[in-house]
Length: 268
View 1: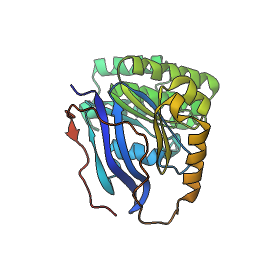
View 2 (view 1 turned 45 degrees about the horizontal axis):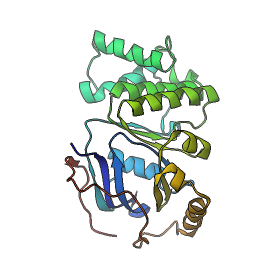
View 3 (view 1 turned 90 degrees about the vertical axis):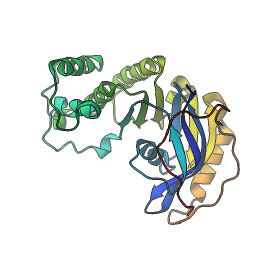
């Protein structure tokens, strides 16, 4: 089996042909724990949506080798005014096994309750989503993610608007998933969390600035370069130029034994 989980091949992603991620090439190793960092608007969330299949490439492609994917979006993308309970949201983690209309079995219910217990929400099954604090809502989303039993996990700003205790508890879960050999990409803003808990980092400024060991990536020079690149982008440009080559992870010489999840598209 290949050691590569994801391989990006000159990937450009965006919205209505306005590129937000430019010419990303490199690999995500199977079982790696990687932070994705950069300023607001640097393309971090766009990359997550591209890997999740929500956005199609403007150009380039990526290959993936995983059994199951779990995507945890930002809390702001979830409508908490909808009259739903904690158990309703968490049970969506079964959709890949049961379909959206499938009924939970007794063993399914037991698994769901175990996931709620693991995130510290035992007894919260019937609580309405609009009654939850930010930390409780994020724990609910982590329970849904856990229920999916994915080997590739995408987390988009999982620590936004949550208390310190919740951050510690969720970090422990992420560490546990990594120890189990799951591949994790996590969008973050807090550099202290990145430096303290994530061995690999991808620094974005619409294009990749640096990618590799966190100690090599999170340097003053790289962070300054990211700010400079970010400030230089034309927000309204409908095209992008080839980037200056950067030091990014390359695929191993063994061929990728996976499935092509994105076909090549014409350059903008």
